[in-house]
Length: 215
Image 1 (cartoon, rainbow, N blue to C red):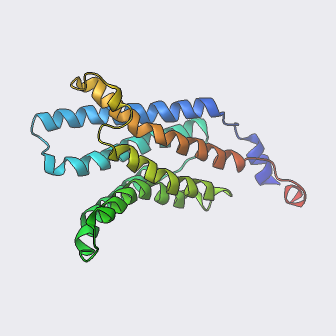
Image 2: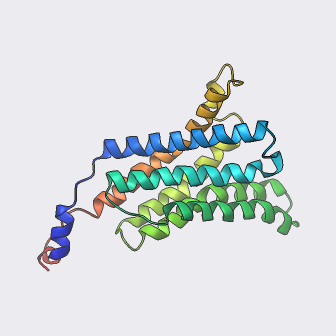
Image 3: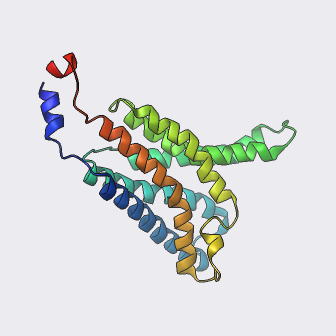
């Protein structure tokens, strides 16, 4: 009974404020990070050899931190480890991207192996984040399903050269617009994950029925 009362007393999250904060937070975090990385790259502080690693790790670290704040502020849930899990997933994916084509040398074509590793890099962050949800929320499997589906979508968007939003730019040389479009390509698929997470958390707050509510 106490658990039911505590759940009923929690502030009820609303979809629009949450998804707005989720989207804007991810966009601003990734955009500012990309501007900083572009500056470091042009000044020679970061070389192209390490840019890919720093790019992927930094993008997921910054956006998952923004997601954590949106979740805590607008859904009232503290998911500690949300950002570290995303970074760990990226690192696993990067290792797979580097090692799998070298380990599976007897495969007839290396391109499918590289594509699989690339998809894995964009899928693992959400899969590891699922480990934070599975013991706390009944419908945690929805997030896992979305992670498995959206990972390839992320990979497809970034595998397409100029991306969806970047291809709309007439003057891609302007760094502010170019990085903004780059961030939009990154954030667009993540909106689906935000919607799924909202459903997972809000379903857990629905009142229990029957005998379970009376306990």
